Length: 82
Image 1 (cartoon, rainbow, N blue to C red):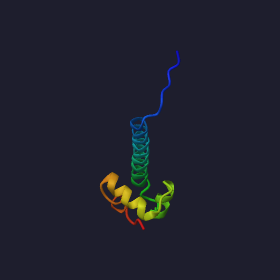
Image 2: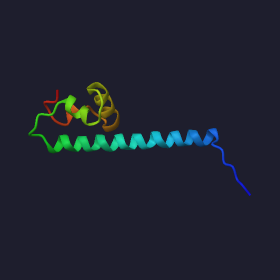
Image 3: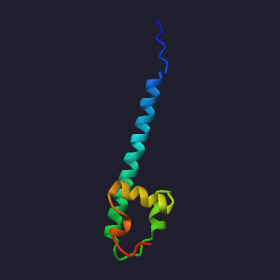
Image 4: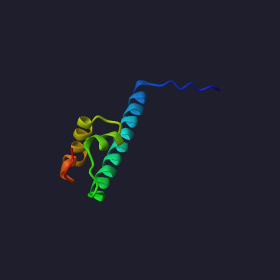
């Protein structure tokens, strides 16, 4: 007896949602780690561009994502942040 399983649209939608959720979890973890890094390295001058580069994002995209996830802009953790 042979059983054929075809990918239904529901399965592919669920798979896509799982992939998106994993990406969001990775981004959230990265942003939390960056926030900790900023707090722990107050003696260093950190730029927005340098922090954004760690996530392979533009500075403006990084700042929006950081604020959306952490709740405030990175400059409020430590100044000066350019």
